[in-house]
Length: 115
Image 1 (cartoon, rainbow, N blue to C red):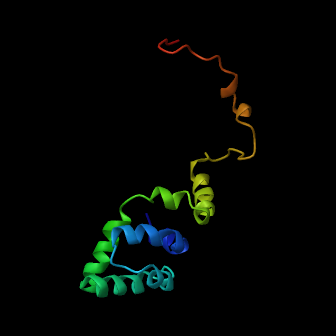
Image 2 (image 1 turned 135 degrees about the vertical axis):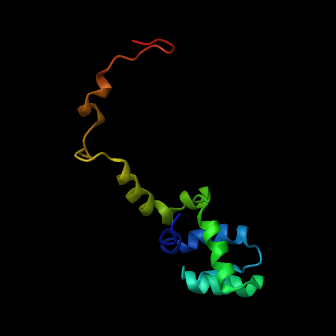
Image 3 (image 1 turned 30 degrees about the horizontal axis):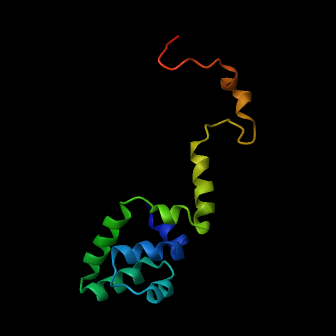
């Protein structure tokens, strides 16, 4: 995932961040407001790491998927809706019925059989 997703939805990510780094305080995290530099400095201070080590830990954490509880959070809805546009082929009208593309009128093939 990208840091912009985390920053744009910071309150939703506070819980998953606390799960990864339990020593961090929710109130302190909320004041960081998604600022990656300030978060790295805070993480470094709490875990006695250098800033580079803290940035490395953050990058490793970012390689994971968006946690399910964050993906289902109301604050992520706009992000998820915008991301869904990436799966619409060029030239397809997003508001038209799927039947307009002809695939809904095909006879169903019984399972286990091929045409």
